[in-house]
Image 1 (cartoon, rainbow, N blue to C red):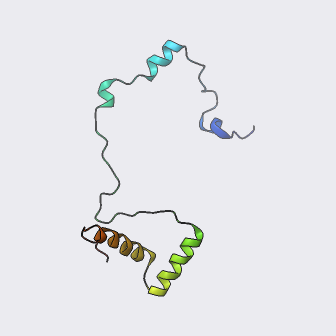
Image 2 (cartoon, rainbow, N blue to C red):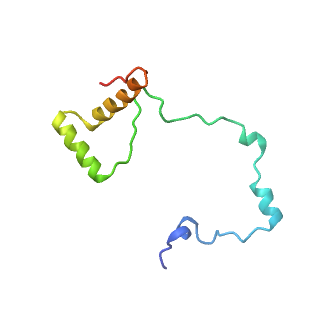
Image 3 (cartoon, rainbow, N blue to C red):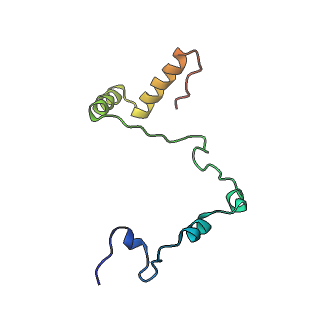
Length: 99
């Protein structure tokens, strides 16, 4: 018996269905209105007092940022928050709280 790969590995052998007729396909893909509106989906992210974020940066810029953080004796996160706080203050808005 050979090992199944790709999408075939997600189906059980012998339970692959035959192609449906067009009328059957439409009938099985419609969702009753009561099911679609039964419960609103609540947001699970960003609910705590501290929210984790990530961003992408090029390797050379990361190396420069890393060296600056070492020189300043702070984390890259602190440098990032300082920069964002400064942008807010330049626009006349309150700065960010940096712990």
